[in-house]
Length: 337
Image (cartoon, rainbow, N blue to C red; front, top):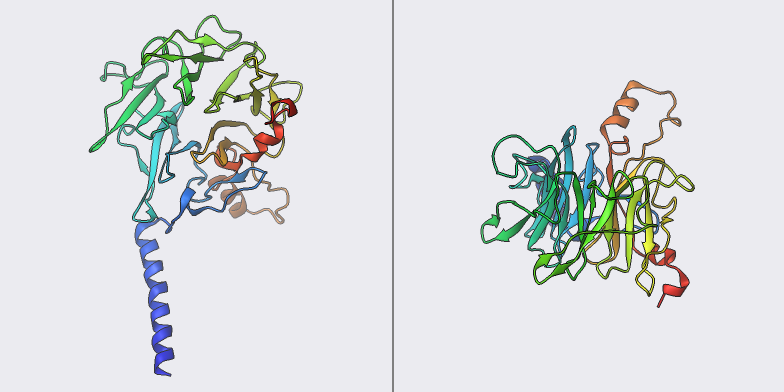
C-alpha cells in the first residue's frame, strides 16, 4: 500500500510540476521538430494553433535548416510588421520573441539561406540607419555572428529600387526571385529574377508570361533546384477566393508552363500567400486568410462571436502547412522522373 501511495504521489508531483512550469512560462511545453506538431496530410492544416497561429495576423513561417529555429511575421499596424523568432533549447521550444534586428524598424517576408547563416527580409527602415521610415520596402539581410545577428544590410541595386521590393526567394545556386513594382513590368507588381555571378547580382530579369501578367503577381517561392515556382496571384478564369496559390513547372527547355491553381486542398475563399518549403523538403508552409464558420452556431451568442474574432480562422491570416506530395500530384506527367 505504501509503495502504491508513493507511486501516486510521484505521478501527482510530476503533473503539478508540469502545470506549474507551463503556467510560469505562459507557453506550453513543446518538443520535437516543427514545434512538436503532428505532420499534415494532402490537405492544408492549421499549423500550431494557439502557439504560432493565434488570432493575430501572422505570415511567413520559415524554419532554419535542422528545424530548431523558426522566424515569422506578425502585423503591428497598417503595413507594419515585426519579425518573431522561436528556437529549440535543451529539447524544448522557447516562447516567441521579437527578433533583435526587428524591434525598432520591423520587417516582413523572411527567407533563410540554405546554410542557416543569413536571414533575408523586407523592411521600410531608413537606409541611412537614422530618421523616419522610407516610403518603400527594400530587401535587407543579416548574418549570424558569435553573439547573435549582425546589423541589417540593404542589398542595394540591382535588387532594390525606389519602388517596392518584397518576398525574396533563393535557389541553391543563389539566384534570387522577388516581387517588385519597378517600371517596365507587365502589371502593377511582377516577379523578377537576378542571377548571382562571382558573388554579385546581375541586373534583374522580368519573368515572362505566363508567370507574370497585366494583373498583380505577389509572393513567389522558387524551388531550390528552380524546377517550379509557386506564385500568389489572382486569375479570373479559375480563382477560388481572393489571391490563390498557383504553380508553374519549368519545362526541359527552360520555359515556364502556364500557371495552375493548386486547388481547394490549399486555397480557400480567403487569400493565400507567403508560401515556402520546409528545410527538410517534406512540407509546404503558407498563410491563409480563411474564416471559421459561425452559421452552425445556435443559438448565436456574444461569446461565440468574440471567440471567432480572437482565435485563428478570423480572416486576419494564419499559418498552414501541407504535405509536399501535393506538388508532385500537380506535376505534368512529362516532367515526372
